[in-house]
Length: 463
Image 1 (tube, rainbow, N blue to C red):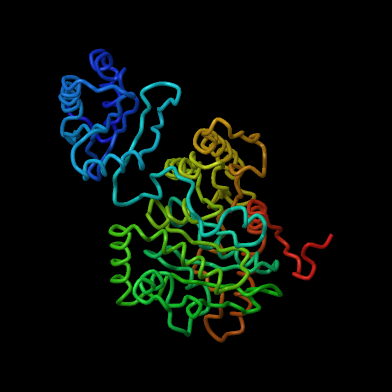
Image 2: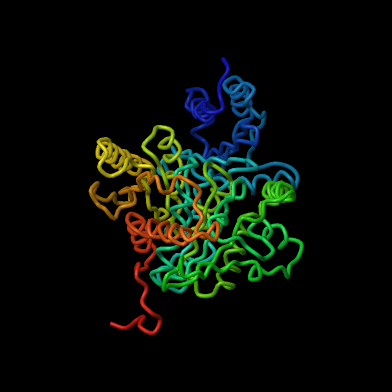
């Protein structure tokens, strides 16, 4: 009978529980690692107990039964610790170094079970590690470095970029030094919200490509400053690193960036370096907001799971949205870290105030959020689950209702010289810095150790 990709692990587990395999092989085994290659085929590494040599007949029987159970999904290999040649020894060392405990592994029972996934993409989404932001979480909480925060949505069209801009404006108007970075390289749009750039129109994609070739390529000369008083009020100028300028060369740049990620796996390191250079170039930033690509995209996964100190995650009350977000929160649970990644959940496109369906949908969203977080985010036994009515818990959402004023293209600059343009821009800024975006910015500040209203430097630290 044919099996599917999703059944392969279960079939291997079934095999090692069969009476003849268990009596003649499994009970002498210390650990079993299932290795799944880039095509989905399965190999097995069997590590015997100390001073035990597994019988060749038992290994051959296991080999034949794996072929029967897995069919075309069997990669025809059983690897053991001993083997001839330096290449074989190096392979075993890689397996031991890179394997991770399986979900069903019980550390108190032998054999131990491990998984090793071999793939060329989606690494950020499929690993369980703690990530590696450009500087530690501790220095962020201490106020010594900027908090890197990803704005992520499983589906597009939910107001993610608009909310990021609203948060940046609100923070800047409250005295915070904020930088925005457009990581949505396939569909950039952050720069279009602000006045047109009169400079060289370079951005993230140019940094990632040029820095490899020209080591002296400096981000500081390509960082935009948005100091218009209509935007910042009496607060701080905004900094913007756009995705790049979309012209006839843009797709060629994007294609080479994809190849870089697949071939040398250095994209995460390069992005980390970019954020460090951004922090240095902008000087004393409080927050860096990343507009991450929607869906299970490699760049979005790197941003939210590897580079950030916190994440703002957008969802709608739909089965499609929750199906994706469930997997997102499982990744952000970070089982190998001491704590999950701090998260702020957004209930996006909610019914407006005064509508009949508003309260039922808000209630359904909150209940679903609590259930999903309980089952997928607080998965470590030593992580306490907050009360379901805790309004500061990550599962308690900030509600962003659908607003007709924001349904058109948002341009925070005069589109022409008419007298009404200044009023239009002022009206948009007023909406983007009012409720509920104030709540979003305020809660975000709290989870990264900030106050919404930043005191003047000369007053900081004073009682």
